[in-house]
Image 1 (tube, rainbow, N blue to C red):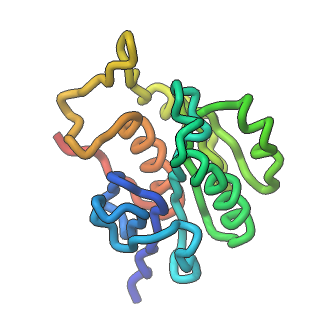
Image 2: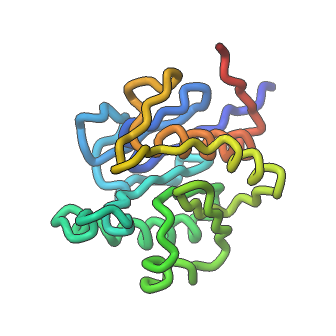
Length: 190
């Protein structure tokens, strides 16, 4: 009998896509054409084998002014809330956000139990999966500089339009998570 292919969910996915894996995509905004439209906190996680989440980073960001916007105030609860929910669900998970140690300490984000925390490039990842030092070195080596002077986003020739700020860097880390969780590895074809 063949092995059941694992199915995952990517909460607040926006444009993120990992086509080699069996993933259902969620986002609040209909413009991203996700499988599930709605609040990430209301998605039933029982039918999924693993969970990926990228809650809005506006409140947690160091970017000028984003923290004070109405949107950031409405969504700031999503990072701590989804972390608490995922730690309790006992399934492999990874949550990505921007790296802002000061703000996370102020809000007790680092006090969540049963969670590994990895700062890779400009992003932070909370997960119940253990990355070894070789994984971390490989992931750090693959990170690209997102910005030039004055915060101009760098566009690479191999980046499609659906990549957004930080998209490539997050993508390679999520791919490593998927490889570890599913046991499947996909090399990029030229």
